[in-house]
Amino acid sequence: MIPTITAFERSPDGGQGLARDMRVRWALEEAGQPYNVRLVSFAAMKQPAHCALQPFGQIPTYEEGDLVLFESGSIVLHIAERHGGLLPDDANARARAITWMFAAIGTIEPPIVEREQVPFTERDQPWYEARLPLLEQRIRDRLNVLSGRLGTADWLDGGFSAGDLMMVMVLRRAEGMDILEHYPNLSAYIARAEARPAYQRAFAAQLAVATGNSG
Amino acid sequence: MIPTITAFERSPDGGQGLARDMRVRWALEEAGQPYNVRLVSFAAMKQPAHCALQPFGQIPTYEEGDLVLFESGSIVLHIAERHGGLLPDDANARARAITWMFAAIGTIEPPIVEREQVPFTERDQPWYEARLPLLEQRIRDRLNVLSGRLGTADWLDGGFSAGDLMMVMVLRRAEGMDILEHYPNLSAYIARAEARPAYQRAFAAQLAVATGNSG
Image (cartoon, rainbow over all chains, first blue to last red):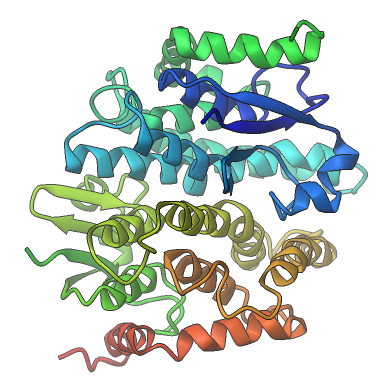
């Protein structure tokens, strides 16, 4: 059964792969699985029909027969557990790869999203400019550790895994903050991921929505 | 093989079960699994020996033979996948329970931790008091949805699962913010979880560390 995912009808990033459907598209491409996409407008995302699938009114969702999932991490893990290409066979290596998925979402993403959101939520506040350096330092505190842990390795723990997929997607949300540029090994890590054919197919598919070439 | 977890030598909450080792202790108790605890001081948490286990210098960690894991969500999922009591047998229900684990960590916890941390990171800033209502509204925006979704059910999706465990632990971090009190069904949900014998054993074990009665 071919699953259906949801994505923004008009992505705020104009198709640069920062919306969270990109995580799911990339995972499906790594797993070699076809999928359908249903585009959702901002208005429709907050309506009961969509909120029955995703109570918080966000994308992506994942529908496969009777199964409905949300949260990009959960969807990527579901795909990874059912198909090859995203988790190692060895049980311990598999558990460590899943640890990096949780580290991406629980430890690295929150300060990045916080910095990403303030221009939309607090730009009119008198403290807006003064707080930005604090927010950026919180990101650097986490990336200092991540960069040290990655070192000269290609991926976080052995071969490419769903842990790297989630981490790269989370790191990409820090683009434009003048932070990633100061971590050459993290920049190379992101570029290495972006060079993967599965990433490129997923990127092209979501960009086609923005450019109206999705056929 | 009995796993070893790490916990604060002196928990900032004085043993009220808010530190993240409580999540792991509770999961192990639900699964009926014995465990050892190694207490770590704040100084030792930042030293190389601990950072080799947990690169971000935090607790908990989980060691089981050669396997080392961190991130409470990952550890709870590892326990849940290997033992009974935390995930349903049905594959779809299992995937939905894992979705709630990710929702707890990725959607509900960030605004709560943000509000929890500002007294430590921004109390001396001129904007501190003025920002608090914004931070609290962000929590309410998420809890409005969660409360609506839970409705009159006992648990988020059928029987108690690791998704409820993570959600209750995340919600408890909002105690003292005068927010949870306004959601009677979420308060009852937390109380229902706290009444579970496994929760009570885990709570007693971590409280004993704080009171010096851990034998």
